[in-house]
Length: 247
Image 1 (cartoon, rainbow, N blue to C red):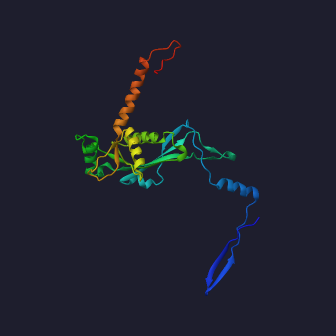
Image 2 (cartoon, rainbow, N blue to C red):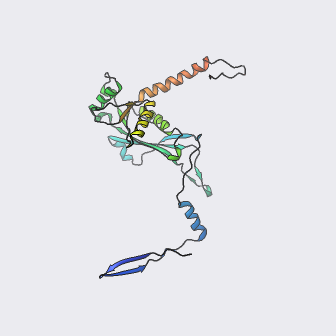
């Protein structure tokens, strides 16, 4: 078969010189086929709908970043029991299905306008500045083949849990999308998750922003857990010893 030959040209004293580029050494047939198989781009298949997903807080690679006034926190979604087994007992790390990035400003350095923004948005003029500690949801991404698994909801739930542990009261996010239709869908989705649109204009000049209360999310989760035993106790027993399910 004919092979593509590479040439290298240059101008020397007004003359064009063309030289034949030496060909790189060819790998043996089986090894070359294996390398091509590994390096060739592939279209990833969608994950099954029943894939179990876990959310982890990624460790910081730079320990010195923990001493900054504004810290950055990364969370990632992984599929459970999805390590790829290779020969000789080697395993590849689990692939990331999604990631979220948070910015955690120092509450002592928070701008007074932020407290005014929270009071205006949440309709709580009685809030003190010490009760308004805001973290920023910088970015989120879900792999296309993992969409539909509810990863965005799992990430938000884990984010609220982490913020509560670290002493933050509210989560700020900005819905940035060039498409008005997509932006409207995203806003409706986050509103269904308990986020409140920030009115415009506002003291901070934020556009297309939303706020989420960390405390209300935890209170709602605790209320749901407390109501479950009561709901089970009120369910009538079936003749087979189970419980009757509502239609």
